[in-house]
Each structure stands twice: as structure tokens, then as C-alpha cells.
Amino acid sequence: MRPTQWIGLALLAAPALLAAREYHVSVQGSDTNDGSAARPLRTISAAARTAQPGDVITVHAGTYRERITPPRGGTSEEKRIVYQAAAGERVEVKGSEVIRDWKQFQPGVWKAVVPNAFFGAYNPYKDVIHGDWFTDKGRPHHTGEVYLNGRPLWETHLMENVLSPKPEVGARDREGSTWTWFAEVDGRNTYLYANFHDKDPNREMVEINVRDAVFYPDEPGRNYITVRGFRMMHAATQWAAPTAEQIGLIGTHMSKGWIIENNVISDSRCSCVSLGKDRATGHNVWNADPRKDGATHYNEVILRALAGGWSKEKTGGHVVRGNDISRCEQAGIVGSLGAVFSRIYGNHIHDVWVKRQFAGAEMAGIKLHGAIDTEIRHNRIHNTGRGLWMDWMAQGTRITGNLLYDNSTDDLFVEVDHGPFVVDNNIFLSPLSLHDMSEGGAYAHNLFAGRVLSRPEPRRSTPFHHAHSTQVAGLDSIAGGDGRFYNNLFVGAGAAPGPGSVEAANPLRYGGYGLWVYNHRPYPLFTGGNVYLNGARPYVDEKALDLPGANPRPGIVEDAAGVVLRLKLPAEVRPVGTRLVTTDLLGKARVPGLAYENADGTPLAIDKDYAGKARDAAHPWPGPFEGYAGALKVW
Image (tube, rainbow, N blue to C red; front, top):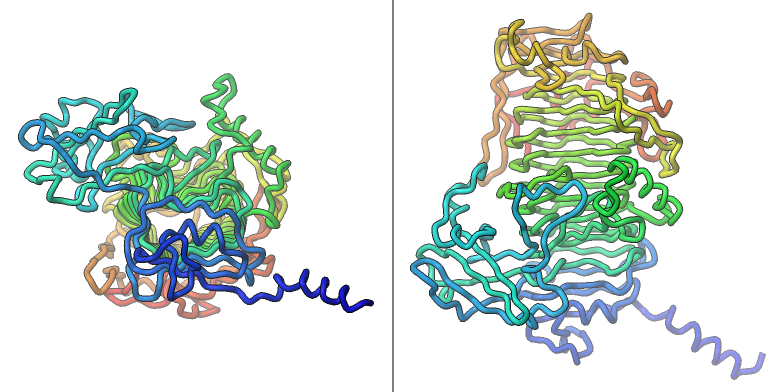
């Protein structure tokens, strides 16, 4: 080989030999700089355009108002593109802009005129929220929002409700709902009217949504991206139906291998974090073609996704951990098909759907379709309406060690899933602990302090899959039952309902405390080691410890030091009749014929409690804790 050939080969190989680089971004920088620590860039987007697999983008203190659209991702776990806030520095990324020059319209009410050109191609004050399974409650809602000193105001569709606001019906924050705004758009300008009460908006910080996301790729397949340490807020997100592209304030867009960690994420008009679907497989297809029902459309979406490569090799496998997620009016974390094989843990999700101005079938702290082999662990979820919603294809899913309370709809809703899925070591304290419209669930070592509701769903046929795969093995409807309940604590509300009560007359609608609500399901439950307290009632012929006169009075105490669970179990509660819950004990779910095992196919053993303490292998304690005190630190 001639020397010139050696030189040519060396030049071709040189890019692969280059070391990964760190790009710095600062509000004092310039996008004409080289991104070094001495000459930082000004925008995160400029760094994103340059960064290659293996590179790190470090963002320094300040507020960045931009939509980051990563043009590429990494190539593997080892060669990610990492976006991170500089250690110890407060970095805010906002989808909003500051609006000044407000003019007083009448006492307390102010007006701002914003040229439409200010918004570019997308004006959130023209964009009406819509989509499959969305309920507008008889009025339009826009993706725009107005914030006063960081707090969102309430949109109204009537000017009179700005001039003379009244508390919103159903709102938890009734006084807050009187801080209202209204928008009109013509061919040239957007006109904003807001009731700021006694505040002068020209002396305060007033911001408005202008971007449909804060961090979201414009195409699927932007894989292996890490986003850590930011405060991300203010996005004009659209309704994220499972049959639509699901855009979140931050979202993965049907990619693979993201890590979203240790961020504070808030104030999305609809969803905060999206692990969801792309547009190519369908976008609001039910609205577009109402001749077929929504379930039929979603089954067709699933088939299109499979044809397009929906698989473990190309999709999901994300890690979402350690984030504080709040003030999202649809979902804290949403995901249709894109959350497969993911781990969601250590997140604090709260204040979701608090305004309640609109509704729909996709609203929860965490709402997932297709949570195949997905782990949801040690999250704190409260004040969300619905806490956890596993809708369609929760197979191989494990929901373990979560704390749920103060959720007004329910803590856990499992809808039209065939299993096997496992729910263990959770603390469910809201009035409705479990809404079960599925089969094949295994529930072990949970504390159920609310009602249980069991309902069939014969009208829809939904998929089940081959083990640890997205490949569909078949479809079936839900008759009900085929659950496993071992070593749980059920707490009632006092005396069992009498023969004339609504609960006794119609348990399919109202549910009740304990497993008696499954007595008339066609497929039997498998039970053992459960404890029933304060009027909760066991399953028919179940051998269980039944203490109707004992009230442990479970409750939560929150303070700056954390969250404490108060629980006064009577002395009679002991590990009697309990067994270690394992793959062998649980058997196989009826419809898919698959075992309850770990996501990697190894046998399952629930041998640790909520706090990670090892369980007694012969006689584990019932409930989430291996041994009890009067007060237990749970967060």
C-alpha cells in the first residue's frame, strides 16, 4: 500500500477517533461562539444543532426561551447526547415570552395587543384544543396560557367572565379561578384581556405561551438522549390522544433510550412528559372517521405501528426518574405505544387536572397505553384526579412501591388489560383505590384504604402479546376476575353496607371495600394472606383475617421533612397464613397463558417491602411493610 493510501484511510477514520466534546451554553454567550467554556453559545438549540453522539451540552444559569428540537440523538447507551444543567445552577427553559405594555381596560382588568407576527407560524390563541376522547364541556379551550408571577390564570371563553369573574364550578382553587383571561384574534393582532385583581401587570412578571413544546424532536428515531437538571415550563401543548401524535412539554416522539431525570417540569396546557406516539400511524383518527368506534381505530393504529417497526429494538426503553411534575391539565406522564420496556421511578407527580375546565379519557398522573414490560416504581402521586391509568396492553407491567393519595377519581385504573401484570407494595389512600376493568392482575402486599370497583367490558376486544414482545398474539374482551390477591391490607369505612345500600344494590357501579365485589365475576380469584379491617369484606369462601371492628385510621402527614404514613394496626395483625409471592405461586394469566415474571424473563419474587427491607421468606407481613410502627416515613 502506498503512503498516500495510508494517509487517506487515516483521514477517513479521524472523525471516529475524536474525543466526545462538551458544549457550554450561557445567557451571556453568543451563537457565533465555539461553545467552549470560555466562549459559550447563547442558545441550547445552537448547541443541539452541533452536538454529535457522545457529546455533552452543559447549560449555565439563566432563563432560556426556546423550543429545543434535537436534530439527532445518540447511537447507543454509551454514546448518548446529554443535555444537562450545570451543577448547582438554576436553569429555566420556557415555552413562553414576557408581555409588557398592558393598558388598563377597567379596574382590575388589563388589555395587551400582540401582533400575530410575534407568534410566527403557530398562534396558541387560535389553536383550539381538540382530539379523540376529548370533552370540551361545551366551550372552546386554547393551547395558550397567561401566567402572573409564575402562576397560571384561567382561560374563559366569555369576556364577561373577565370583567366579572365567578369561581369555577368544580375547581379546587375557587379563589384562583377568578383570575381569568380571554383572547380574540383578527387578521393582524391577538388581543389579550386579563383580570389581575389588584396587581399591575406592568410591575409584575406576565408571560404567555408561544411554543407548542419545550423539548421535542420533530421526527421519531432521535434516540439515546439524556435531559437532566432543568426547570422546564410553559408549553402550549395539544390534547394527546392515544390515536394521535402525543406532544408533551418534553417528549420522546416514539424514539428509544431517553433518560429524563431530576428536572422540575410544570405548566403544560395538556401533558407534561410524553413517551408517546408518532403521527404517521394516525392522528385523531376517530374524529376523522366516526363511522368506526374508537377501539377499532386503536387496534388499527397498533397494526400500523407494528408494520412501521414498533418493537423493543426501535422503541421505548426510556428512564424517567427523580422529576417533579405538576400543573398539567391532561397528564403528568402520557404515552401510547412509546413507553414500552421503560422504567418510571422516583417522580413526584401532583396537581394534575386541577382546573377541570375540560375533561376526557386520557387524564391521569401517569396514563399509558401499551405499558409492556414497563416498571412504575416508588412514585408519589397526589391531587391528580386519576393517579395511575394503565389502558390497553399492560402486560409484563410492574407497579411497585408507589404512594398515592388525595386523588379524586381513583388511585389505579387498569382498563381492558389481559395481564400478566403485577401491583405490589403500593399505598393506595384515595376514596377509590382500585378500578379494575381487566383480568390477569396480581396484587400483593398493597394497602387498599379505599373502595375496589370491578367491572367487565364485553364490548371491546383488545390485544395481548407474546411474552416480552410487542407482537400481538390475539384479542379478547374482559369478563372479569382471574386476579391474584395475596397478603394485602383492606381498610373499610366502618360497618359493611346494608341490603338497601347503593353499594349492595349495584356493586358494578359503586364497588365496595374489600374483594367481595368480585364474588359474581365469571373467573375466580386466587387469594391468600389478606387482612380485612373496619368493615372491608373478603372474597367468597376466602380464608382471611377479618377484623371488622378494628380501624387503623390510615392517613398522610406532609411537612418539609417529607411524608409520613400514620397507621395503627391492631395487635391481631400478624404474618399468619401469608406466603412469599413468587412466579410459582401466581401461575399463569388466563387469556395470554403467560407467567408472572420479571421483564427479563427471570422468576419473580416479591421479597422486599415498600422501603426495600427483606421480607421473611416463610411468613412475610401482610401489607407494604415488613413490620409496622405507628408512623412510617414513606417519602
